[in-house]
Image (cartoon, helix red, strand yellow):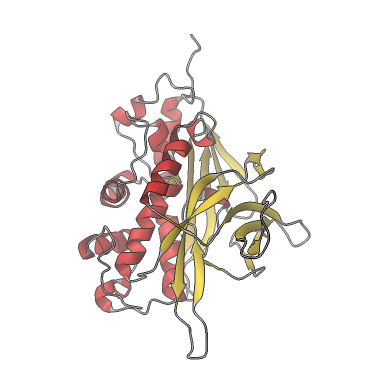
Length: 333
């Protein structure tokens, strides 16, 4: 696997350097240092990304356009260039596409994105059928670790918010992982999804992301994805529906998740998360979610974004929510 810049990436070597510096990774991680692009590198990159760049859908609610651009240069300016001063991130497609171009520019030349079907949440618990394509994950193939070994694929989900995996997940059927915070365990299962009609020879199975909040609990599926590459036109259709459709929860639920990180001799690890859901700020560092603050007005929510997430909205952005259904403290006409 080469550490030379990939011409298929939208990002230049200078932009890669700016990104890695923003994540707080040392010079040894930069392509110019010819790092070994192995699982240790990939895990450190992933953990630094999700603990530096928040999952957030604020551009749907706090922007004059109330729309999401997936242009890689727009994403870079919003998330990386302005990151030290504004603390912005993006929702699933924004951060997944940024991460994909960075992976390829760093040297993971065959990194690609796959579309994901997500089960809707009822009282925060996924239930019912898998919906249509509303999410993206990245897939990366690492070379064999030994001459007799096999290449290994990993799923990297940097944009599922607080319910997402906190590490790269190998595409290995049934392998269980501890998900860093509390007692939650996660795994990928390779199987047909409920309602799938064709299951004969040549039928495609999906990788199903499951979780359980303790070894005595039942496994519950969150989402599923086939090992099929999604391209730019696919992103556009997903993005339009997810960010604009009245029935999409993203359009009526302002969300932010910021993972917390600690460093050790074994490498970086996720130690907790802070979340905003509508007007409530919550924190989880023990496996149990606690309410930190309930915002009753827009001024309180804008200040909570700054205080708890380091997200700074411009006056124009903060004012653009006025009159919308998600505005806090609005008086009904």
